[in-house]
Amino acid sequence: RIRFNLLKKKKKKRLPFIKVQFEMWDSDEPVPRLELLKKVKGCDGILCVLTEKIDAQLLEAAGPNLKVVSTMSVGFDHLSLDELKKRGIRVGYTPDVLTDCVAELTVALLLATSRRLIEATHEAKTGGWGTWRTLWLCGHELANSTVGILGLGRIGVAIAERLKPFKVKKFIYTDVAPRPELANMIEAEYVSFDELAKQSDFLAVCCALTQETHGICNWNLFSKMKKNAIFINTSRGGVVNQEDLYEALSTGLIAGAGLDVTTPEPLPTHHPLFTLKNCVILPHIASASYTTRNAMSALAANNLLAGLRGEPMPKELKL
Image (spheres, rainbow, N blue to C red):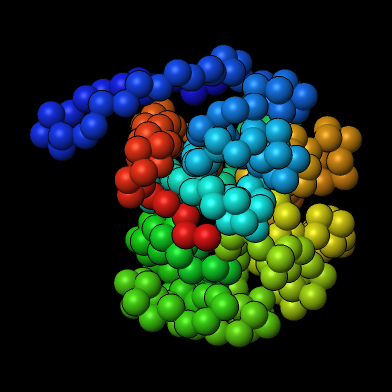
């Protein structure tokens, strides 16, 4: 699935030459679980993507030789961190290199949802485009709006930087604690979770999936939001209670939602959210650009090699 050169000796950095024997799952489909458990036996390192669950069962199957796990993702909810830490296994991941790409997609999804672009395209293709009508396919614009960010990190800042030229009036955010250094970059105000819901015309979810954030976007949030509010999630599907979101959208409690992530993935085609015109669902493509995927692959490989050498990784997750 992932193609990269494992051996590139750079004389300038004087890296020790390391011979690596590797086996690659050369398919776009996820590795079957039983096949993965069989192949990891005796491995010193594993390079995975977010479809592979690295848990106690897999680590037991790998055995005591395993020194490093490198994931080609910024999220790590597919990794059992406690089990990895207990075994002294180092973890590499790929933050930063996908920030711009995810921010771009988030803005695109926000605009597609708020300006009803998917609906409009369907109407144009299927004969719904008739004479000019005053309020036909009207949506909500960013100018003079308040944009809320749930979880202010690199991606949240990048989203705000791209939205600012749209004449957004105000940026607000909430997090586990104020983040003044990042907030100052976009002139964002720290507010409570409830105030984020009440004030936001557009709400972008950018937080990591943790025990604390699991299902945090539920009826409690949606019931406090404005009727014209647009809800956008490009973080992880698990932060949203999808049943509550369906109720909020189908009853007009909020105006629309754009999702790049769902639970499960892929979302079954018969899921109720697919029946709603005011819900735009993408198949988890936020980092899907050639530039970003190549950068993620290279970083994941370099993390793996550094871990095998016993050196500092370019991007290591501290356990």
